[in-house]
Length: 317
Image (cartoon, rainbow, N blue to C red; front, side):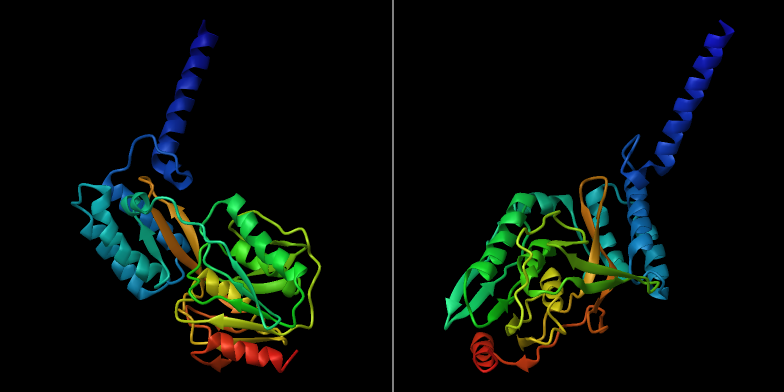
């Protein structure tokens, strides 16, 4: 009988310990015993920003962190904390960081999947690459459309049109054009401590976040001129896709400065389903140039991007 009591006592203590651990630390693993108060909700968000934000070593961050905690002391609802946290995350991560609150996520509904467009003009293959926010099946299809066009058609040059591409999941964009990219380093992430992590292309896959897809035809297409079109609306993952082509001897950029969201965000879910997008790294291209939310500059400034690109290809085939 004593053994049974000891076992029950030990079990009870173990359960209490586990519940206590989850109560105090479970939020780190998105596990909650009870819903957090709005104040606890803010503290958790601030801690996540502190861990990940590219600018959280700054004096400005220390100041706004205190202001955020003080300013949320009397809020009653999670939704009331979002405007306060929006100000904080811009300091922690810069202009590329933001919060999608659960109401806005619900209002947006399902994202529209836009397929790439393929055109042949004057024997030049034109690939119009839109932003991508679809599911994994759509991601695979998106990449396959681009990859198939590059391997099926005969052409004297390629135009990669990234105008208006505001980002999303970069994997289908990059893998779709991987046959004109050399395997190896595409670009690198640089965090606030100057740690460098290389993003590499190898055998139809890239070692990055996003959809886990690959392309099957890994045959490289070499020695063709590649024109890249960018504008003020080329942003985020659209810019990272463009940077994969920066520094290649057979590529040239046409248009205007890009949007200047050249950084990497980490996605963090809050208790109510709101999502924090926190900038945690800047970008270094294959030429070792570092971009800190700075625009990509074209080689040729022009308002006739496609016309200038086609003219360049025709004289460089």
